[in-house]
Image 1 (cartoon, one colour):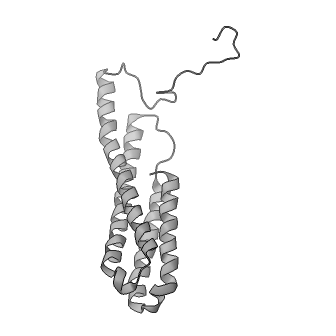
Image 2 (cartoon, helix red, strand yellow):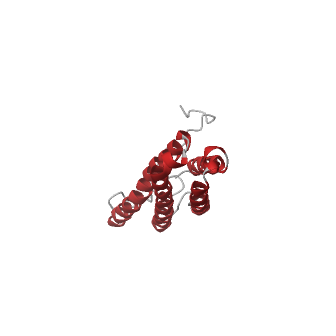
Image 3 (cartoon, helix red, strand yellow):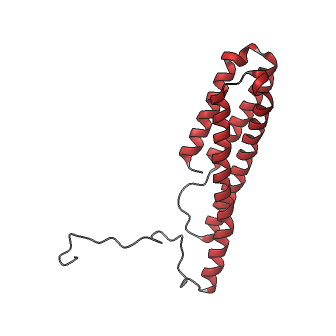
Length: 163
């Protein structure tokens, strides 16, 4: 999950918390008592997810696999948190008079985090296949995590005769 997506999800959750503290939910103390701790816990999970996401390009298969495993684990926790929030909202939307925008934001968050989690967790298996293939010599021994892997050499147009 990109940093921008995590920040967007975090912002949507913060919006939900802000609306919960004011407006229609404020009138219902039961909803506030349940919703605020749930949102606070969710925000904490999202902060941990954002802080723990791997940064930078891996240089080895082991590092790439560790990054993918960490991202998978973090996004699995974030997804579980989103699902708890979504379930509570579905069960209490009418009683608590939750605005549609909050419900839509959480539903969108569930969709996005599920997609990103699937990509990260599938990446673990893909990296392992690439490692085995490289060890077997199936790709000429090239390391797909090398600094210039997959990049075409740049043509220096300043060199006479380069074209």
